[in-house]
Length: 405
Ligand code: HGY
Ligand code: MN
Ligand code: MN
Image (cartoon, rainbow, N blue to C red; front, side):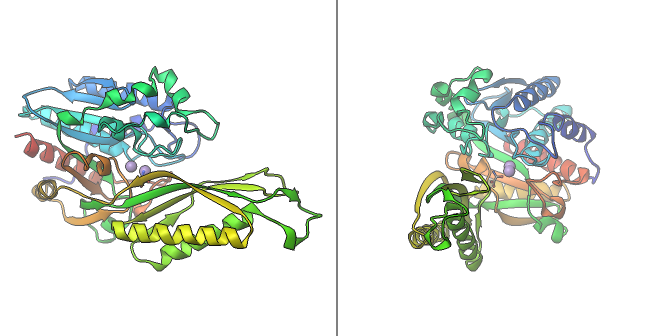
């Protein structure tokens, strides 16, 4: 039991952070050159501890400690980031998994069954609206229909996969969950609770349900100066009313969130009334019935505003994940491991989505959180103290040891 950081882990966190597009924070999007270089770097670190690695048909990085027999214990998270995000979201889960294996090997521990380390491709959804792409493929879900989803530069996912020498029609060959017995993910909390309550490890009980839409509002482009105010069919003003309305709806109900993170307008000229406006809508709730209710009320309000503004509104679903409980046994194992490490703990739900929410549909899944300074995430300000990161990795090592003994 100690409060010391883990120098190798700190070195890995700094090393991985080098792989990012220029600009504030970390920008390492799905299927980019920065991510591919990060995989190569991580592969080298895995080889140093004797793991063999490869990139599977869906772009997941998988390193294997092939020992013993039986279903593998899978540990990891994701290396792709949001634009100008932090150096811990996803990355710490992968690097803490590597460090946990490093610690076990140093102690001469030999697992009863294989331990695999994974970095799932495109957890963040941010480039192609293809959330959990890699974990869905790993679990055998058919994601081959997503090839035509396009990024902000109008590049399709299928095209973006080509420099990786990956063909989306073959991505289902990544299916390997049948060889996995359980999944454990360490993640930064991305919220304020651990820090506010001065607690060191969060034991995740469930992960929020979420629904994503891409909403297209259509009005009529016209002259900004000659069109009387009462004759305008302004798509941007209609969208603005919709965006504020969904915020009020989410504010009014407990444990729900609504977020509009991306908006675009056409023809985007200062002297033209916007004829069309596209925006994303992300709805979340810790319970499925509350999510269904939130979604229904938002859809109705968007429709009603479109009618009163004489606009068309089309709602295109992009993702839908039910709220999911974590495995009871893994909750116990994680909580016991944290206490054996001398950490103070609390059980809490996750308001962020994670690959674990997908894996949990197929195998027992568990998560542990370490504190985020100020609760900040998806920002260059994201930070976790080295002592907290080191403690999390040691707890993860205890969990892997317990699951593999
Ligand atoms: O959106 C989320 O909650 C996660 O960071 N992808
Ligand atoms: Mn994440
Ligand atoms: Mn994230």
